[in-house]
Length: 229
Ligand SMILES: *Cc1c(COP(=O)(O)O)cnc(C)c1O
Image 1 (cartoon, helix red, strand yellow):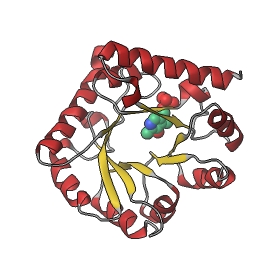
Image 2 (cartoon, rainbow, N blue to C red):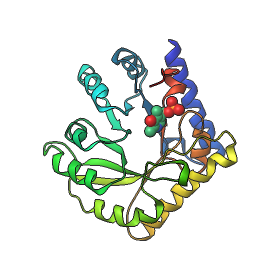
Image 3 (cartoon, rainbow, N blue to C red):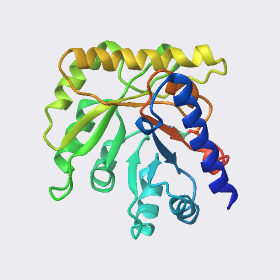
């Protein structure tokens, strides 16, 4: 077994153990392997170990890799900041987009989603860290944004995503994740049917699973460190 396949196994074990500790079914938590800055060749090895959902943050870089790996039945998730001029590529190449935080971007994705593809699965990125983060919709503005986006026919609003400010203390790590869960519960109480909480990365996946994560986005713990950008 290669080192990367071994690391993938360790991450799968961490997910299982955290699910057990939280009294949850491990099958209710999906692993998204975040492959940004890693080559198509490296992704192929992880795919061969049975991982098929991959997350990318930079559309230009990802697009080339997605084309190179088209022979594999992989599911691509876009998780990075979205510029208006990149929405056409994103609408055509991904199954999921986790980082929508503006109506204008959602409207463009809706208009540009190719007719022959199924609806694009969407998570709204929420700012759960207050002043410490600039990206994501504020919780107070979430209901309005979610209501508008849920009406767009080529998108399917699945849930919420967050990238909290880094914390090493596990109790502190859980706070933003608990907030995201409460935001999801409020939307569902208002009649939505959101089944997805995209939260938890290499350093805090246990805390995220304790608070109800259904997709954890793991880069470093599988692929090793990335170079600074
Ligand atoms: C890079 C990235 C990750 C993965 O982070 P790691 O700490 O390497 O696991 C997860 N989510 C998003 C949005 C990212 O940009």
